[in-house]
Image (cartoon, rainbow, N blue to C red; front, side, top):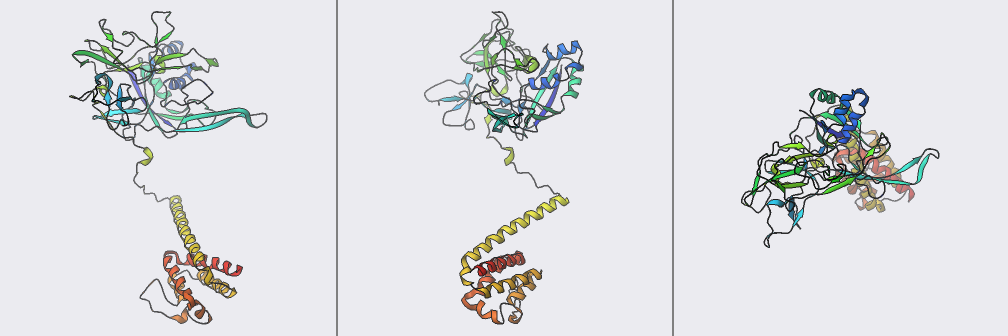
Length: 495
């Protein structure tokens, strides 16, 4: 058997409805079912011989696994749905403490527990790390091609998986020659999910090596009896063997779960099972197939038996080619901490948001980035200058009234426009380099410190107010003086 491993990255938002209904609140799946990857290969259906078509698409000898979300900072391990046998105390979180149901014994001294149902985790080094899947909701309308506008009474609400997220999946092939053909077909850019002709569904698939959660063939002990835990890594669908063999059942037999011990029994009191139902869409026939009813991903069957299993993982049930039926026997994350009342051996950590991770600054000296950096700095300067100018105008416009001040502000602006050196600009306006406290004062050189303008500017401290403004904006003195003089000239003219 050959196992191929891939990573699927969402290039746009992707819609994978959890139900077939088109009305009401439609929610998207938080994983990518394997039948989406089967559909990608099915586009090349005519390129295979009849024998290959039967083996790839109908026999279950090629199994396209579900894609589970990548856990931030643990991209090399495929995540699994949180097992339904994991519980945590009410009014607390799973990060505080968690328990394994089939090991836990209820008592008055113990807390009331709540079942974990959502989220994907990887379990490593006695710790559990979760993925933080991001979703979006948008309202869309159908398009009327004849009237060239939105169609009346056809509004849809779409929940989608956000672009940029990555998912890991496997493809198992019993035939290595077919595996090599699939290795070349799956990588690349493809469309999956709903509304592929609109803005949704674009993904990129590439080969990617990763680890998977391991199981154990040996039974474990509870109260002196041996048990095996069967964890549903994917959704499971079983057919009722007592009827016509076509009706789905929620109560699989031991043989259907891969247990060959005739003396074994399923302990339903210790098991935790959830179910699902949906009607798959057949695009070839343009209609829906019969409803599928099955066991939800993350369910756990506890089986009393003394016999070990022949393998750690396998596929059971039907529709294996679409990713249904993968189970893990006795996974390590369903074990308890020794000497406790069912406390989980793996301590759950808080989720990490990929956007919150600080990346190191990248040194880029391209002309475009240098231009953008300069523009950004200029915008910051302008914002600071405008705020300071508005503050000066608001506080001191009452001290500057009349045409005389309007013309003097115009002269100040003219000086600032002509002089690019901040030191020379300061000398021409104030008669001193105010940027250098040790510089000598020469009042005869400054426009505001000699002649007819001097008396008016010294009066009521006008000159000191302008000096204070210049000192606050000394990093960009020329630009600040130009903007202030322009604004004050307008106000004096209006008055």
